[in-house]
Amino acid sequence: MVKEDTGLKDKVVGKLKEVEGKVTGDKLREAQGKAQRTKGKVKKDLTDAKKRKGD
Image 1 (cartoon, rainbow, N blue to C red):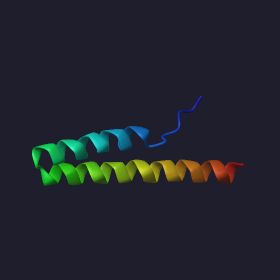
Image 2: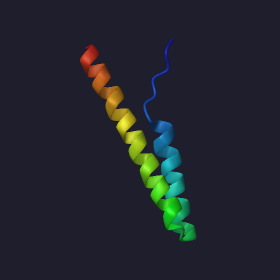
Image 3: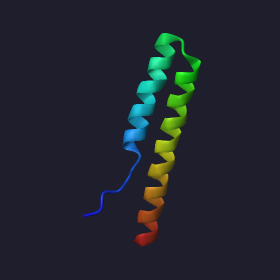
C-alpha cells in the first residue's frame, strides 16, 4: 500500500509555526509557517488532481 502525501502534516506544522510567530512577535517564524501551510495546500491540490486524472 502506497501512502499518499496529502500535505496535512505541512498544513498543521505550518499553522503551529505561524501561531508561534504571532505570539512571540517573530515575523520570520510567522512567514515560515505561512509558507509551510501553502506547501501543504499545494501538495493536497496535486494529490486531488492526480486522483481526478486517474478516475
